[in-house]
Image (cartoon, rainbow, N blue to C red):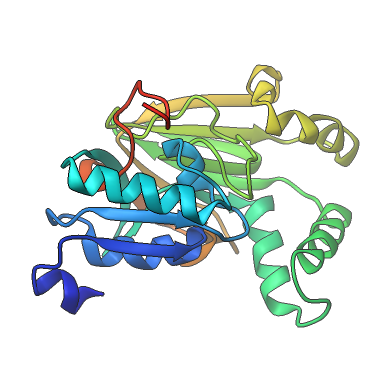
Amino acid sequence: ARAAVDGGTGALIAVGGDGLVSLALRAVAGTPTPLGVIAVGTGNDFARALGLPVRDPAAAGRLAARALKDDGARAVDLGRVGDGWFGTVLASGFDSRVNDRGNRTRLPVGRFRYDLAMIAELAALRPVPYRMTLDDGTERETEAILIAVGNGSSYGGGMRICADAELDDGLFDVTVVGACSRTELLRVFPTVYRGTHLRHPKVTTYRTARITLAAPGLTGYADGEALGPLPLTAECVPAAVRVLAARRGLSKGD
């Protein structure tokens, strides 16, 4: 992919889910080469945030072709951690522990192993002492179940953990789920799909262009891929990639 971009390809098309899109972003981020997304993976959260067709490859292909023909690529922000890039959400805490456990488990296959991993992590649920530094330089210490840093609004196939995040505002939306019991977490969890969890008293939100997260024993994940152990610093890079998608404010049929 990098060789094709360096060679002047007219576009790079990613056919898959958020993990494959994450790979494609490494090739096109910071270049004029537009990215097309044919979302046929498990989560497809980057495509959802862009209003692209999900699990409808023919429709997604037509939209990408039309945008390429009309030079209709839309510039959107990306998160950057070191030399890596992400389009959706950087996860740390309970959600990243579920990823860790699921990745270590060979059986069962598919999403069921992550369901089992979630049950196991719920049984061991405990708050984590975080140190969080935002772009104003203020350092905050807090105990939390998780901290999610959203370039996009959702992860995990539509869980709107950072429900108000926009892909083109130059800022991350940060969601902090404070210390709470298993019972309370289970009660709040279903509201993540509607984004109404943000109104819960245990949830705090911030907006920032840069954030450093430090916590013991946690791995950061973004677009479902492991970034490495905390501490990690993420920066929101405005207009870092051009995507073959309808312009903001237009429906997919316009």
